[in-house]
Length: 86
Image (cartoon, rainbow, N blue to C red):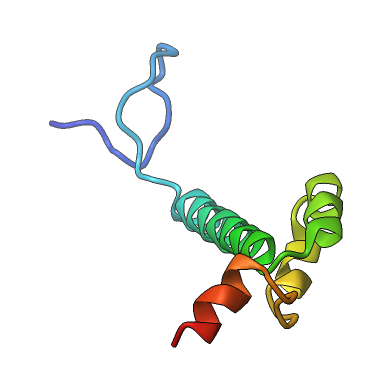
């Protein structure tokens, strides 16, 4: 008879296949999405020319970048030059 895959350890102390912990997988996915969103906001903040907000974001785990990405671009920034070219 195969071992129960939902039990983490055998009686002898050895481990075998366990069922996945879906909450851990879900929180890992949420964390990865959050990191991607914050890094994208940092790239947008840099392209818009907000250097001070970019530096503050490095110190404060990227949270100011979410605000900097929403602000209008600085004149002469890469973002402004690209938008003016349309």
